[in-house]
Amino acid sequence: MLLHHSLVAYPEWEFWTTVTGLPKRKIEWEHDQQIPIHVADSNHAVTRGVSDWTIRDETYLTDEPDENSHVVLLTDHPRSTRAIAWTRKLGAARVFCYQSGHDDQAWSDTRFQRVLTNGIEWAAQARQGE
Image (tube, rainbow, N blue to C red; front, side, top):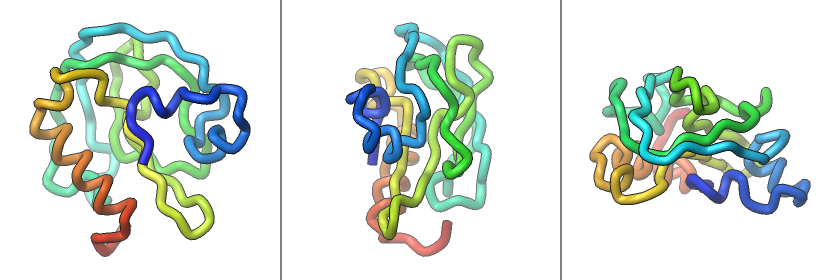
């Protein structure tokens, strides 16, 4: 599971690029933004029990995840990458990437917590279904 800043860590390490699915991991960011979150795949285990909401968090403006990524959450915030959360397969492993999580404003949000919990369970293969 990759959360927030870990998505853009190690920008020169090719393996981390493969793990994240982000071709270039250079970013612009904005603190304390109201970010509308849209569920892109309501049938995925990561988004079960979640509907569209707005979260106060930091935005990242970087490349979109590559074609081997399955986007589950999106935003239309003008200072953010469109994909907020996505899943990937890396060999037999499941990878869950979630751009949110800068500080307590995000961590105290119950929808953030739900997606995070769902994502951990999905990555650990604790739930059935994609």
